[in-house]
Image (cartoon, rainbow, N blue to C red; front, side, top):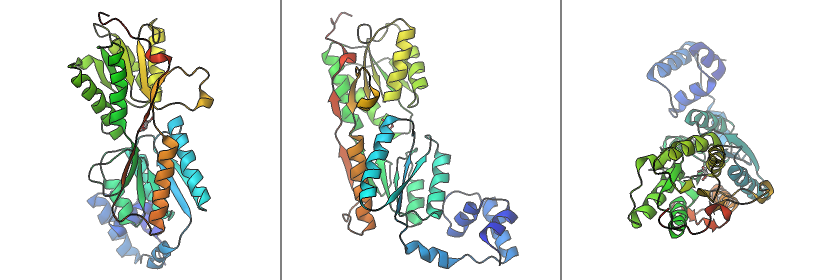
Length: 338
Ligand code: RIB
């Protein structure tokens, strides 16, 4: 009897693509649909509906799909998820999407095939297609850390807009006016919200930052280095940086050191995401710290309550406040003339 693999081989696609065509879910072209349907007809393949029936059985596994497994923010998130899942008798599969929508889709396809009971997703895009794909395949999902427009789903995140606003207010109170924004990727909500908080604080102070002072890049050290170099070439030079995440801040420090500039004497630096105490030999960065572990634990508890059929009737959006941690990098008050 023909199997899904025989159909895939005949149609020249992956088995998951055959599954998507059969379930009419996920991404595939009309040409792919036609070749799969022709292969099904030619081979007389009959989908194993019984296997889908097994869907109802719990595998007692959850999955966490995050975007940068090297970032201490996300390892702290993973710790929080695993603590709660393990207490409830679940194992956790970790997937790293590298901020790639294609990788995220491949992982979600695989996780649906593996019949995980639920997914905690840090989405790489601001569009709801992947959330809807999971819901169409009866896979409960809680969105973590970021928000997605038009997604009818539970969300647990931190208040990036207010955190960025608070950091810029601190710099303004210290006398800074030429404050540069080293931003994250456009299209990702945490980057957009941090930029919005920066702009709100600057506007309330009657400041309209020059475009050269407002950069967007990616949540990486290299991008932080490149953006810092760019804003340092602006005239007049900024006197302070707001880094949209921890890796951007680290890259910016490298660029400043190469330029012979010191933090905070020459440039004040504030950022998002604290680093775990175990990683900080000399904790000097002023940050808006996100309660990453608490956020992850609340998201996992919400997902488990959904699995138990005990979740609240409406989808939830839980927004946790950031914590402003003052350290040396924001420096002392500066004369307004500087
Ligand atoms: O470090 C990666 C960033 O992306 C973090 O600030 C986190 O909030 C995520 O959105």
